[in-house]
Amino acid sequence: MANPVILTIDDDPAVSRAVARDIRRRYGDRYRVVRADSGPSALEALREIKLRGEQVAVLVADHRMPEMTGIEFLEAAMDLFPAARRVLLTAYADTDAAIDAINVVDLDHYLLKPWHPPEEKLYPVVDALLDAWAATPEAASAELRVVGHRWSAPSFAVRDFLARNLVPFRWLLADEPEGGRLLAAAGATAEDVPVVVAPDGRLLSRPGEAELAELVGLRVAPAEQFYDLVVIGGGPAGLGAAVYGGSEGLRTVLVERRATGGQAGQSSRIENYLGFPEGVSGAQLTDRARRQALKFDVELLTTREVTGLTDTGSAKLIRFGDGSAIAAHTVVLATGVSYRVLDAPGLAELTGRGVFYGSTATEAPSCVDQEVYIVGGANSAGQAAVHFSRYAKRVNILIRGADLTASMSRYLIDQLDRIDSVVVHPYTVVAAGSGTDHLERLTLADSRTGETREVDASWMFVFIGAEPRTDWLDGVVVRDRRGFVVTGPDLVAGGRRPPGWSLTRDPYHLETSLPGVFAAGDVRAESVKRVASAVGEGAMAVSLVHRYLESQ
Image 1 (tube, rainbow, N blue to C red):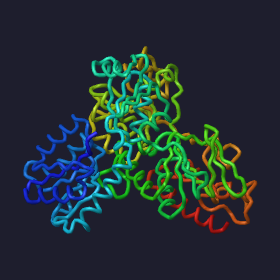
Image 2: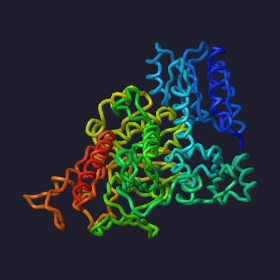
Image 3: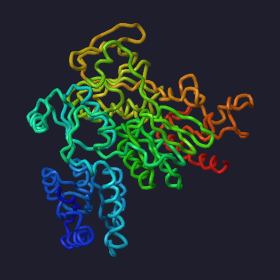
């Protein structure tokens, strides 16, 4: 395979030669340095690189160019190489542009011209970006291909797993020529799909998530048997705890059942997160948090389901579904919540075939000029409606109540009001669904009168309720009647500590009824269901972990 590419672009020939020369001097033995003098010519070079199946590691673009600015170029380049790290060259007067680029193209770094000496101002930046690029699954899986059927639940499961783990792949339909040719070359048939073909030719047919994770380079097995801190759950709270734990020197492992990011990682745009005035996608936020955790030597385990937690006195024992176990001084529970299953006739067998739970980015392009139905009235439903409105002919939001004000943020309600293709249907519930190989019709009912009507529908995305994933903690820690983990002062009733509490002090603020085990984020009873508060609780939990360890 050819060396990965570092592409530089500047319309000033002298600057263009200088930056290419400096980069080639340091990295020319491992990377191919490509130089362009305009945005259009650079995009043409990227298209040729894409067709040849090569990888692009870093893009370095000057901001002020006549035909296309550096920001415009980087935005277009993201469509071809979303995993490439992005650098903007700016003059001192262009720092506002660099700040804009952070929001528009998720800029990784900006360099002020001149960058001399490169040993101090250029190479440390590029070194860090190349390390980050090489550490991600995207760099190891440049041409992963998935062949499947359009309305196949197993095919959807593979695509959804890859998308949630930020692994790029090429989707091919089994009944189209290119997909058929790839199946023939692999010695497989349409009955074997989904078929996943790795860049090195390895082949998986109908893979499980653990097999798929190993294929794309995700860690699935712990490197050690004992840790200072085990974080269970990879949403914002879990990632926050992992980053702070690792940065403060704790031997930390994060265990995730499916994919880091949680429900927030699926969001197309989070617009009320501090520091991102133009909003940030859940995938971008997750990617940055994962890279940050890896920077602090945190182990990230994927496709590992935790089935048990035992206090052995000297340590906490965490058991996995395959029978293996690890131990730790402390544990942070950050398992979040899952969307409640919509209990209506005909829907269960159509899950993954037109009926989906949560926002699935892989399906949005397939909804062009079609009707989309979204069930639910909270922020996650609103964010999905905005995203799907860019593709669908009409987005129908179905809610039980009179309007969205009870559960959705005002900024989202105002945003939806400005989109003509989004229609809110109050007092409406889904009574049934039907179809042959995929969803074709929905039966909708008036929640007040019970009156029903049928509509043609191929796409329904469900965002109802929030159920904590805590059944495996039954009898281990105190939970409320809905299954959320009770912590801190809420455990002390009438001056009495929780049953079995072995210490002379009261539980710390985020501590559960089992000393040394903390809860953060949506899984915690009475928590604020917002990304920022989840990250904050993850960080606070680590502070309390330190206090607990110092007292032992």
